[in-house]
Length: 146
Image (cartoon, rainbow, N blue to C red; front, top):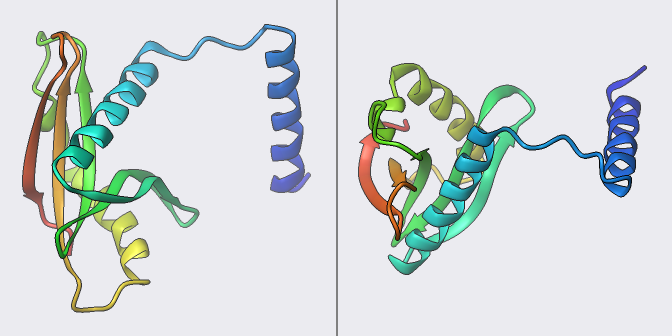
């Protein structure tokens, strides 16, 4: 079976499960991450960012960029890290050298469509959901993109 046929079959099965009320529950870390990305999105919008892509993926490379947006005339590749507890390492610490490399590879695909003189930087948004309201910290230019 080719990939398209498999995807169509899986989509149909997912829709049937949803209609029957038998959806698999989303893993807690995935729902925490999704919530953090939503919080970060609206926070960045308040700061004046123009978000142009969310969960950007490329078929040639693994990984994704959580958010891509403009901060003035600088294009920002934004990684969002969310934690629901402070008992583990800080969220921004999770953007290690390997993660930065994955982000750079995917960013290059996106940047191929941009003029070469486009300024670009890598930002990290740290979100702690164990506070009300959630605590958000923006680290501008946290990692090199080019």
